[in-house]
Amino acid sequence: MSDTPPPAGALPQSTALSETETGSLAEAMSRDPEGLSRQDRDRIVEALRAHRQRLQIAEATAVKAPRAAKISVPLTMKAGQNPEDLDL
Amino acid sequence: MTLVLPDTSKNTSFSKESPLLQLAIDSTSLGEVKTCMRKYFYSVVWGYQPKSTKVDLIFGIWMHEGSERYQHAKAKGLGHNDCLDVALDHVLRSTWNKELGRPWASGDSYKNRLTLVRTLVWYLDQYGEHDSLETIILANGKPAVELSFSFDVGFHTFSGERIQYCGHLDRLAEMNGQRFIPDLKTTKSDISPHYWAQFNPSNQFGMYSLAGQVAFNVSVRGIVVDAAQVLVNSSRFARQLIPKDEASVDEWFRGSLWWLRLIEDAAKDGLRHGEAAYPMNDKSCGMWGGCPFQSICARSPGARQQWLASEFNQRVWDPLQRRGDI
Image 1 (cartoon, each protein chain N blue to C red):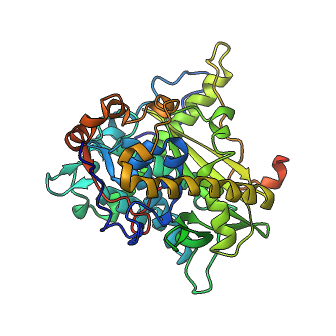
Image 2 (tube, rainbow over the protein chains, first blue to last red; image 1 turned 180 degrees about the vertical axis):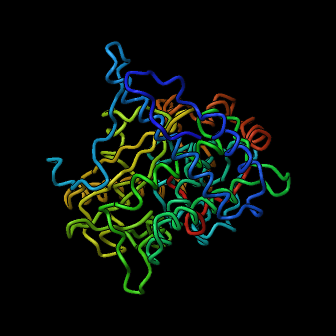
């Protein structure tokens, strides 16, 4: 599993789960959770975080690309933001 | 035609004096009334539900449960990763079919076990650790998470009984000295202004805001909705404040009393006229993806009960016993 961002200017090949992530997740999630250890669950979390990171990089790259598809930014209120600032 | 009436004797939310009269009303029940009286009669009074559980519903319940487990662990002082583990462990176990020895299979490419776990982990990574909404700690020392409420609305029925509103809040939280009711929603739709518009006005949030005031004696500034958009390969999140001031909560409450009168009148007439006392709102049939009872209402009145019994499962919708409003 690689967390390294792609070289500058390179377009990401896929935002799907990598083979390693898929294997790691599939293996852990196909098992009875009774038999999963904390380490097993940590691996699930790691794989999902890596997937998210790669997706964010891909989106950032797509935004910079000249003919990138329009990406909506749904965050209207961030976790630490005060609702008072929204002028509601 | 013989009049067949539902047996509500096992449903603690219904009157013992007048068996069709619901006395403990949650926002789901009231919402059904507002949508269509016949739908309310079939789904709440009779307790009919489609044989296949809606994926959206069960997915939402598990997201709530995971998030609640996280908040409880956080209130105990555990660190983010430990809280996340508690939530993940719960959801993994909940979505495991012990009888079949295999994971839950939703048959849905958007909402399935993997996307549930992914959405939960990403959501808690984003809003869990550094959330400016801090869960209120109740006087008993417990975090204000997964709060059940019921309170008398001051409505006296023809049978001399009193109606109460009831339900469950995700949690009560505080930010900059102001109180809010956070709520988590999952959707496959785009989180657009159109999406947010559905929450104001809102039957569910009207009742929640009232509950904050009456049941918990907390004057809330509004509902903070965390929306999780679940896609096949990704999940996106957004947060929005749905403001509620006292005047709008009061307006919601006064309006709700009008609907209670309909419930009362129908419960009285229903003993003599059955479903005829619960008129269809045929303008609602196609809304929100289509009413599950549309095919029943399309049949001749005398044939409906037989079709309901064969096409639907029956359960007891008792808001005093179970969680609704996801």
